[in-house]
Image (cartoon, rainbow, N blue to C red; front, side):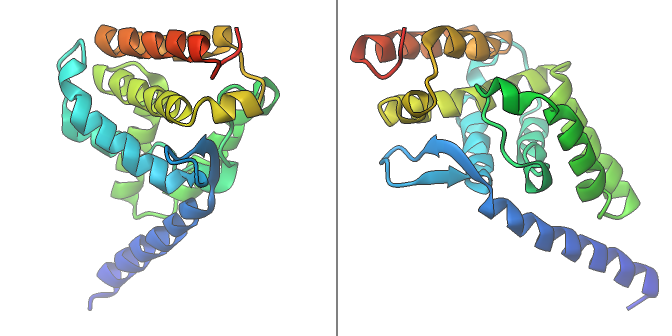
Length: 199
C-alpha cells in the first residue's frame, strides 16, 4: 500500500474508532417504551430516519441527501462536549465554545478533504441558514418532543420544564415546516391536558 494511502486510511479508521464513543453519550430523552435513556448515536440514527420519513412536509424543497449527511454529523461534537439539555439555561452557557473546540479536534482527525467536507456540514447545520439546515434542525427538535410525549413527559417532569419553554424552544420547527409545527404544537397542548407538561 502506498504510504499516502496508508496514512489516509489510518486517519479515517482512527476517526471511526473515535465515533464509537458517541454511543456512550447519554441523553435526557427516555425511549418510547420507557426502559432507559437513549444515547447520542441512537438519536443521530433516529433523527435521520425522521428526516427521511417526513421530508415531504418541508415547506421548501430540500436535498434530502444533504439533510441526512448533516444529521449524521451534527452530534459528533458531543463526544467531547457532552449532550447539553436544550432546556438547561445554565448548561447552555459556553455550549458554543465547547462544541467549536470539539469540532476542531474531531473533524481535525480526518484527512484534509474530509475534514473540510464534514466540518462544512456541521457548520451548515449550526447556521440554520439553508433550507436543508432548517429542516434538519426541525427534525432534531421534533424527535425529543415526540419522546417526551410517548414517555408521558418523563424528562419534562424530571427537569421541571414548563409549557412556555417547550413552545419557545420548539417553535423553530415552524421555520422549516408549518405542518410539523402544527402537529408539534397540538402534542404540546395535549401534553398539557394529560398532565405530561406543567403550564
